[in-house]
Image (cartoon, rainbow, N blue to C red; front, side, top):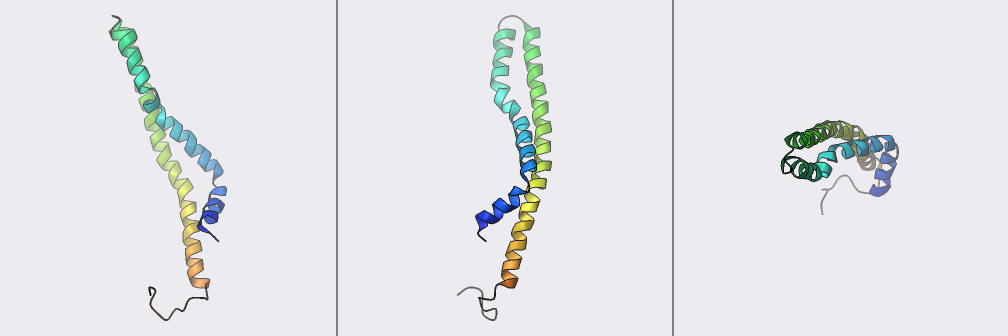
Length: 113
């Protein structure tokens, strides 16, 4: 079995976990995606326009986005383990099975020639 096929077979059973991981990654990326626009709104529509309350409001929205990103980051690492560990187990199983059950190479000589 090729390595590519091994990966696809192992990941095929993890499609739900992959979708959850994708959703968590989107949540994690919210601050990076909206930060420039939110700071611009805080400065232009708030502080520069003489409305410090509006500026603080936009910075508060940015703070909420940063908090959502932190939660998303925590969820990404938790979900990543759930997706990667079965893949790792499948790879280790295939390697060990290939070494133990392959009768072709001689086992009495050195590994490298």
